[in-house]
Image (cartoon, rainbow, N blue to C red):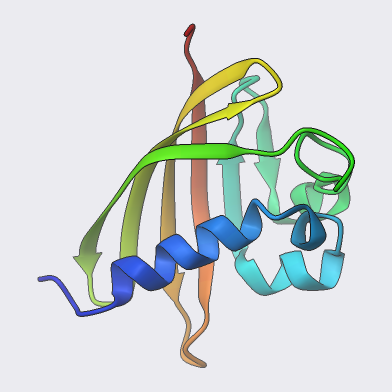
Length: 123
């Protein structure tokens, strides 16, 4: 069920969301998060769409002067047309996490993160 380009588009959106210039802009972040967004962070905290938009510039990776996310081993699977599951690892400021994201394409063609989960692991 691989729809050409969908995995690449979801990966591009995921990488864009890690960019400090996007994370520090509520308007740009809003373009990449689904209104039904939920995250279970590496801390175990559950984040809603509104909570994440309000905090994204303040948490790790949100400043050009601070630490940046270093992703690796990124893989994607098309679960259905317009729905992509990404898995990868990140390193930021001495912390490592396995990550899983669900991206869905909206009717306007944009990709938005619907769900994200991070699980810390020791290096």
